[in-house]
Image 1 (cartoon, rainbow, N blue to C red):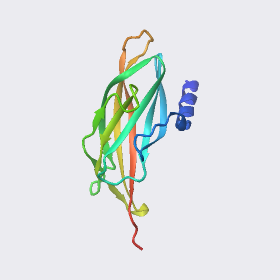
Image 2: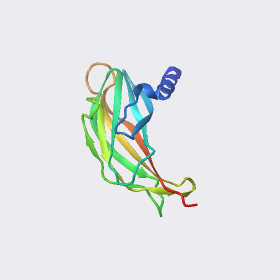
Image 3: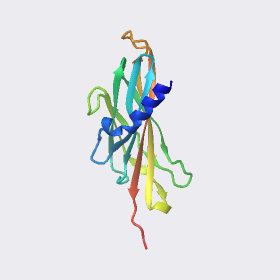
Image 4: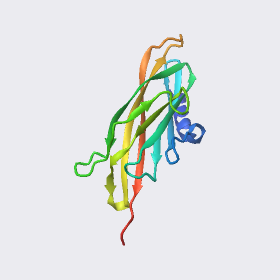
Length: 166
């Protein structure tokens, strides 16, 4: 268990090793690793675009590697957009998912745009987050057959800098 935690922490620190840029501005900022029986999977878990313009389409490519065992694409879904402020929520359109993604068989492209962003007045920036889940068919016992469908979370944080009036 301790080895698994240390391995997960090390993978999250070595983001640059597994980074993939989905568009000119979307960047991977964190990856995570999980072990499901005989299968070890590392995936892009946090992405960001700190110079986003509200309404522009975003294409983010989420990749995964299988260090041992087998994991193949099953599906992807939007969980929700945040912040969910009552007076000023971040809202996005319905995403489309393309498999295989632009990075090959171990990737999925997620395309969407934010139609509204939450204004963070203190920092003069509009922000939004998209929370997605992609599902992989996983061989947990190493026999080459699918034993389970596993869920992996991927999030994107965007910021649309606003001009400040002095």
